[in-house]
Amino acid sequence: MDSLLIKGGVPLHGDVTISGSKNAALPIMAATLLTPEPCVIRRVPDLSDTRFMLQILASLGARVSMRGDAVRVCAEKLNPVGNYDLIRKMRGSICILGPLLARQRQATVSLPGGCVIGPRPIDLHLKGLRTLGARVAIESGYIHAKAPRLVGAEVFLGGRSGPTVLGTANLLMAATLTEGVTTIESAACEPEIADLAHFLNKMGARIAGAGSPTITVNGVQALHGTDHELIPDRIEAATFAIAAAATNGEVTLLGSRPDHMSAVMDKLQEAGVSIKRRGFTLTVRRGGRLRPVDITTQPYAGFPTDVQAQMMALMALTPGLSIITERIYESRFMHVSELARLGAEISIEGASAIVKGVSRLSGAPIMASDLRASAALVIGGMAAAGTTRINRIYHLDRGYEKIDVKLRRLGARIRRVEE
Image (tube, rainbow, N blue to C red):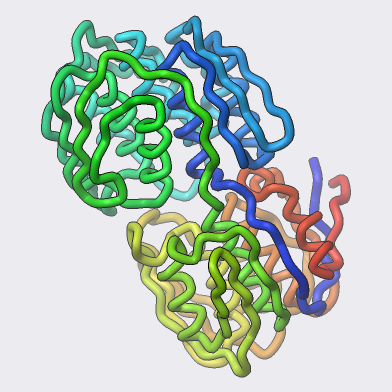
């Protein structure tokens, strides 16, 4: 198992190319199960999560390959049973349920795993599929779904913490091969859902309204293969932007989508960070003295929960008090105790973290608990004086493509070592 060794105190400078979106890649890869024809997906990031998804697709009978950042999938023949040993490793694997059910009219899929950041029930996924006519039961850790006939219907997907992103993806994929019209109300509005709908429409689906709270799907009899390029990863872009500010550097993000990052850019600018936008390029640098900001995570287009930890690392170095409130996942403050080992002053009160900025952080051995917490610890380590060692970085490899290589190119003193 690898660790990251970081010698901090070096400002980041230079250009970094943003990879394709992990959160778009996983459901789009699953959507290839909807057709027996070959599909090609480009700009796929080389991550443990995308490699797991390829293994899952192969275990279902699909022929898969990856050359560079291009993935090719041909699901001519399918086995409708999802393997536990693969699916348990990744939350996003649940999105094979909808396409398997739509194409095979039956699916047996293990309950998924993933980061430990609080309860993430799949009840809304199952509610949506039942509304389309599926019979669904959970037995011995598996979801068993059958639907001799799927019929379009109106489905409300609002949950306690807002719309479900993967639930919207699952229902959207299932509805493409359903008789009649399906209307999804309180649908997730994330750019990754819009990208999935774009991919499905290129396959011959008839979807309107993706990216808004109401999505309409006119079912079709069959879908065909297609070629598609993923949108950039807005969370990776936000992470590098925050790292530039935290290290007092200047970084240009190439191939980003600023229009997907409005909430993050707004809070960074409020904090005193300079951002210059030019097409799909963003140049980020600390504009002077940082200012504290209050943040509440929300469904898109609000401030993303996946950037909460990274922003906390920046606020830990910002004079004054910042309040960061988590409204999406109730257990997503596991990085607080590790940032405290670097010298951060953070207290938890219910769903909020009270961050009192300090003048400096100092390196220490720390441990990653989940994907985005890992990114926050890397930012903290790069901004800290001295050496930081981050253990359990396999979390980081789930969502950031060669992050240590990219950071070294920006001047960071960071390397992988064996634990």
